Image (cartoon, rainbow, N blue to C red; front, side, top):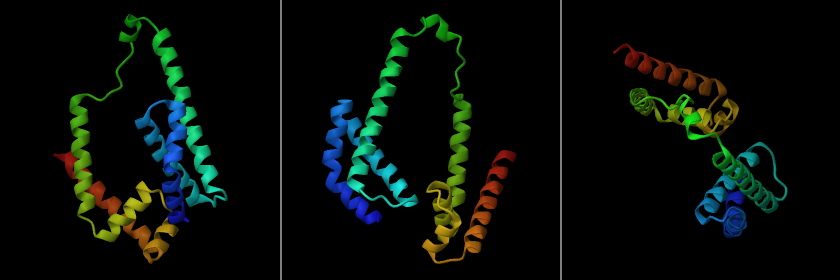
Length: 171
């Protein structure tokens, strides 16, 4: 089904992008929204069968474009008719400090190194579980292992990452 979806998307890509472009008026944004359409339809197809894929792609693209335009218009109203500049100075900044951002980048690099130090199957289990949000059963079927093996791989990976972070925090 996923290969068929990809093929249908590639055939419909120009039409989808053009439809979105007519709504948003920006070719680069239209391409981004077409890609987002593919990802959304892909996620939907993983959870349930889609009878009319082409129509579903077009409707999803249209909805994303209309949502984007709705948000853009509401932002422009707030920005144009918003509060005077002085009132904005009283709003606390939620962005992390440079120091906090640097620490987080270091922690992320540490986690990446920790994950890279794991066996390839364990890395794949972590990515499928935490990034792709697959269930343990689906991962087990995909890799040809038991659900218990997937559970143990995740447990080992999480422990390994926690230990790496704890060492980082102690220094």
